[in-house]
Length: 215
Image (cartoon, rainbow, N blue to C red; front, side):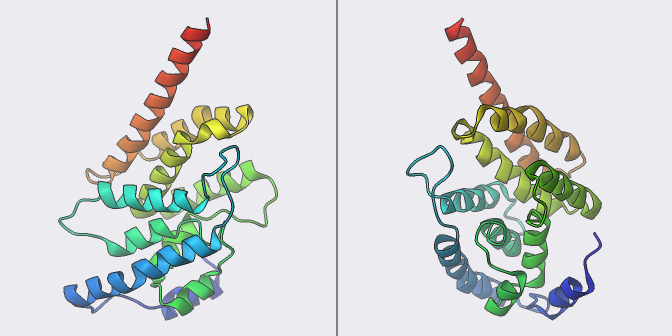
């Protein structure tokens, strides 16, 4: 993935866990996790479209919990967990990458968030999503894909709040395409692929049973 010189410089100058002991690594996570949760609650405001009472920030919390829960704990990747929690903080929370670096989030966390973020300068939402997919394909970053797989799986479970057109696009285009694009993931990361696949199958089964009932 090719980044601008400014973003490359930001990643280089941001905090790094390199050289930390395992104890220091966990201490860093225990310090940054509550900060990340507070930032998500403060910055990602409002309710999800078509779902009154469902606060937007709750999606980020669920994605974090899913990524955490599916991870192989032989080698916990705490930066991945924090990136999952913050995956929408730039796109929906208006926080900048520079602000994240100033708060002490590592370059790796910031890079993962960048890969999971739409380009808000593009007006057409389908074009935004397509470009993000192209960037993910180019980067071939397993951890970024793991986050996006859980992100889409959670969005699928709440797709009944979308317009019929957007829901159909998510079920018939986004999810199948993402599954096809992540067939190369390794054994551990395939858990995230399978999570989206099972979620999609449940949605399709439900839709089929509803249609049968209506018929």
